[in-house]
Image (cartoon, rainbow, N blue to C red):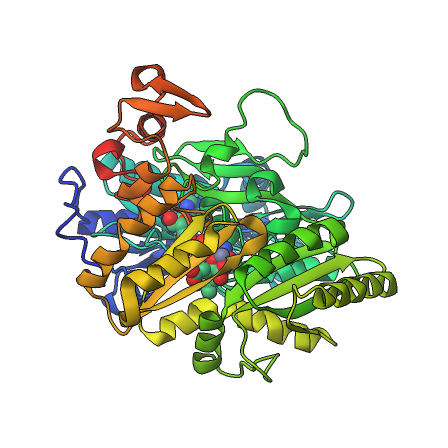
Length: 592
Ligand code: FAD
Ligand code: 2HG
Ligand code: ZN
């Protein structure tokens, strides 16, 4: 594990969990959604890479409560009234906790119940009761698991709000956690922060087939959204190897890029609205479903990519593209990096309107996959090549596009840009090609310790860093380069048998300085998390220099806004006690 104890001190202003706190959370969430037994916390305290490990004593799981809950409450009230028993305490509790959106309907039912309770049982009321119960049963079997039946839970948004309000008043630090697939140590506690896990907030709220706008809760797993949309003839505008576990709230909070950004753009463009709960429990309702809305500052963008440091995303509204019928995928080999670049340029020129992905991996990455990933087969087994490209086209005219792609590939082969290649013949072959590309992170994990860098760099310079790193580290490490070539995003991974401070000292700060020197970004898509919170200055204005290069001008620092300081001011404004995901994103000395 990466030892942080020596570099970061636990903020002494934060309280520690008490038994009173646990009782309070149980009142809000119910017994089973407050997890404090050690065994269950082991997984939640550790990140996907098994690199960062916290020591939280408590995980909270707010749950979606459905419309039918109100109905089931109503049904039970009527039931009670009819049987002549009126459990006042229970009813009052349910009434107090009940979700505000359905408040009115509940008030009406409450009145109805009171009136019923004064009357003798009557067949009409029995019919009403049966009707309501049938409705509940139908709703529950359609949308929910049966264990939610009869639960007097508050509405989700109120649960998240009450948790944060309480944590803020007690100065209890929290870490929002989705699928826990983040790669920068952002989703796990550093010390004993309370984990707020969104896995049970997994309801699809609405989908508009005409506009393609999906509204859902933050805990929806990306792959579940993909399946839901597939049935409607749509796709998600993002796709990544972690789709089976990552959640849309986590995707939005990291501003995840992935394999489709090249075609559909970033989440800053596709997310139309958000519902966010701030540190003090207040709700920021920005859950719009409009493509255009220029009424003042577009605040949702602050939360896209803020890695849980400014608020908890509870709902997302996202624009989804229609599913197109013709998808072609080629697995290609190139002799050198220069050919990969030229091929990208040519593909953009010649196939621009249908080109939907352009990914690359070097021979070291492919080797790792073939060695460590079950079922992985080399699509081009006859000889080894230095680089591999996955090129995908998506459109709606099968024969025309296939012909066009084949002509392009033939031409590129004749011109020497492509040394070898194969076109997927069916969906199974296509998914086996994607399995190779998406499987690189897992193969690296299985190979031992891994130092991961996710860099935006000018495409022509990108691979120089991999080669320089290889020379720098020699045979002690396996230096691997792959990533989203179409987006100029390099995933530089350095694999060693185990973590070693001497190797780390050779990699850092060299890798950050190199990136800064080439005007790149030290985080293209994974975020800063814990790993890079104190490295932000490599990509944002450095605080140490007195003269700053702005475009082609040299300006005295006093004339420039310090971007990191501005970020810290926003953090303090929205989260004055600094309880939301502390020690992450910004250097701790600035955030609180
Ligand atoms: P988590 O890991 O749980 O959390 C990530 C961050 O978001 C944390 O800081 C957490 O505090 C915060 N957070 C989570 N949910 C919320 C919420 N509801 N409100 C506020 N904050 C929240 N990333 C890419 O960009 N592109 C890729 O191609 C890609 N491929 C991957 C492949 C693999 C195999 C793996 C393991 C990871 C990959 N990732 C990729 C990284 C990761 O999957 C993404 O960052 C993903 O978006 C994280 O989602 P999650 O639900 O797992 O979030
Ligand atoms: C990918 O593109 C992910 O596969 C993970 O972003 C990158 O493992 C990595 O470095
Ligand atoms: Zn990636």
